[in-house]
Amino acid sequence: MASRETEREAILEAVDRIAARIESEKQHLADLDSAIGDADHGANLDRGFQAVVEKIEQKDDAETQELVKTAGMALISKVGGASGPLYGGSCMHASQELEDGITAETTVAFAEAYLEKLRDRGGAEVGDKTMVDALTPAVHTYKKSIEVDELPPLEALAKAVDAAERGVEFTVPLKAAKGRASYLGWRSVGHQDPGATSTLLILEELLATAQVYLDGNVDVTAASPTIPDEDVENQGE
Amino acid sequence: MKKLVNDPAAVVDEMLDGMVAAYPEELRRVEDTKVLVRTAAPVDDKVAVVSGGGSGHEPSHAGFLGEGMLDGAAAGEVFTSPTADELSEMIQACDAGAGVVCVVKNYEGDVMNFETAAEMAEMEGVDVELVVVDDDVAVEDSTYTSGRRGVCGTIFVHKVAGAAAERGGDLREVRRVAEKVTDNVGTMGIALTSCATPEKGEPTFDLGEDEIELGIGIHGEPGVERTGVMDADDVATKLTAAVLDDVEPEGTVATIVNGMGGTPLSELFVVNRAVQEFLAEEGLETWDARVGEYMTSLEMAGCSITVLDLDDELTDLLSDPANTPAFTV
Image: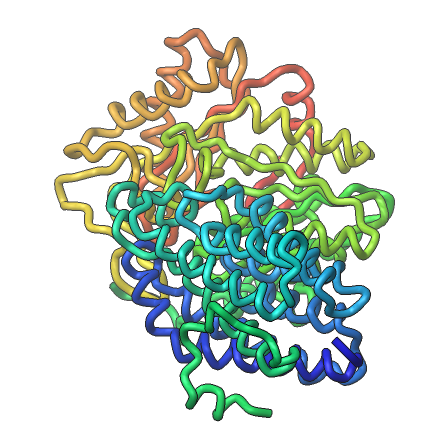
């Protein structure tokens, strides 16, 4: 990506999109969470991302790394519960990888650091019915697409979103082994995990942002599944 | 359910101001946070001992602020962990350069937020150690935890770690004795009625007039067995036996009969009488028997029983002075 100013614009657009998406899906996330948790996942994340938008807009001169770290801090302070450290702490930790700005290499490093911190902090593995089930295939797909298949970042990200979507579907038949849903045991089977779902929503909005800011001259085979036109119109800067 | 609250969302904030008003010599609030610290914090050259967790467990945690116990206590919303940035503020406010030991109850939200807070404080140059308390012998995994829950045994960790810090022990030393307590303490509780959070205002779970629940947690989370009503001696014997099975003490112990918030002291003393008789029958000598409210669950009726297996070092540290609103020696 070109200039610091462009990176800043892209980050602002990404958090605006994520905040709007989480807000519009707040009830959906609450419904998913009420089946197997305490129904506050949507409201908590909504409050968190509204704070992220506010904090980032205040940071006029900050470098990319500082902006992303600020986003993590805002999530930590406003989301609370276990989701605060998981989303915010992982973001804050992974922001260290963006010292050289946003490139194919640094975004792979960011994604890997985020996932590593998430798994380390939450103690969850694939199959435990958590956000790790959506993020792990997404990060692995992204890394492989960039480093092995040498795809352009936009295409790699589209494939990662696809992988995350399959990961979310994969949580439905699982018996929860971590988090509050784990108390329900077999009663958690048949429900889609809210944490995996919100992770997918965030990745979809990152992809939508990338489609605006990265070279559009890329064959995106796995088109973004859910960016309705009206959303794009509403979110334009 | 009737509650003495104004705005349910303001309960924690107003409670903290009320606590400081009650103990102005002992406690002060860190500005713009839900963190209380002992007035002297940070205490020169001393390792700080801090704790915190959801509100609704009063006098935990701020009741144990003062000489010989805690330097800082962070209050989360009711039954909700404090956020990592508030915990980090507390750690930094209490650090005098000798480092900070955080006493954390084993609940997922508490552990994750303390871990994140420790990282944030470490970035600011503070040495931080976490000690996770998992004394509840009732369940292996529970609603909110991987592994056993941390409950009333935490009070002994506060006392012993606080004494070691006051004696001038370094960070590793304070951590070592705190972990010695967690390795040798067990607790089990019972509910006669449900709690009700201020926001919800109605009972968290249904428990019939003729039912009690054994092995309950401190947030209304389920226990391990629901039975008909038992008398005080049977409850005391059953809980104590379960704790002894786990802790396997020999010789001398310290005990806490802890009220859950809705049980009168008279009943807690009745229970304590049976606990002490049972311990004597098992050939154990009680060196210190505490009775009162230490780790409550709003107005839930019921109690928990904590047993700490003592050696000379722990006995010594428990004997040191403590001067806090809810625990004195």
